Image (cartoon, rainbow, N blue to C red; front, side):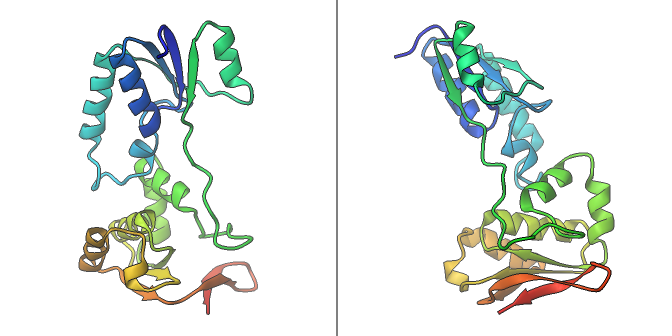
Length: 215
């Protein structure tokens, strides 16, 4: 087993779990987080109505109580792990997360089109007012059938959307989201458009979004 100083790059769920276990086993652990606050997807990717900020605060306090040190606003590029090893760390755990979203088709970005990562991060951050202006009184389509898609759909309702439609290419039982999540979304008023394959976005001559193209 590794003893001595250990570095953890990334203060999300994987990094926090690793840091806690290493500290319990006698290691002196330092967590490096590129953002101003640790938590990763727990802080920026899960809506507050599903995961209380107080819960995350308590989790972080428990990890710190084990002796783990946090250094925030410190990211690493290529060769970052090697540089930490040269500074005396005996091992480096890299848990930087999967922040790059999967896009359903080419040219997915554009006016009034957002990835789930960007959407949920803005909702949890300082740009929630912008999202309210974007979604308020509008019809919002969410492409996907997993837990993150459900989170986006329910969040859009909370931002004042007139109607939210979750578009998924497979059937209801095939949705990756858990049964309870699906039922909560339906109870809140999200409409499920199933067995429809999105192929692109429809825009007018000025490039404004007018709809989603489906098979």
